[in-house]
Length: 264
Image (cartoon, rainbow, N blue to C red; front, side, top):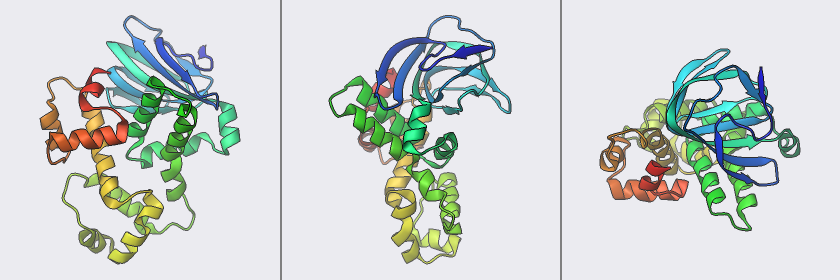
């Protein structure tokens, strides 16, 4: 069994930014054959695939990982990466055990957040942008962005959360591309629209329109590196008014322009 120590990855590490607070952003690239046997990482980490991809095998999951996919790995979780497509590029967030202790978190908090949080990819890209252009505030900014990543988990996991909150989240995830009004959501959920309007920011951390924009950006990030996809077509496909609108929202949420993301 091959064991990867803190901050180690199978590919070539082209960039590394350590916040010295337990979070390390690591860019890895793959141009040649890498080890295809079973391995695990000592540290918890999550990976955003930017380019190329691989076929990944885990104990209870096997799938073809492509650009735009975001994956979470528990500390010590055994997996294999087969038939890596060259060139490949990933952004990895390495999380130390000490960080979990200091922040009073566990791995399951992050695992749930990646499922619940529609803008997880955008947040990781913002962290990456901070690492590319570091200043004296970058360490703290990345920590703040990390808490934005897990905040929806805190909201959704409250013991006394209303049932309509979970139902609404599922509804918005499934119907993100369809025109939706507060009145229509109220009718479907059988909840007073005033109740939804009043409590939505508490449970989702933003307004309804902002949440929908985040979902659209998340969808776009999964498609933006695919060949023969024009930015204009992608903008309309993901529900933006036009390419200009798409560009503005993407820059606002990720720190990158669409063409910059295509070249990462």
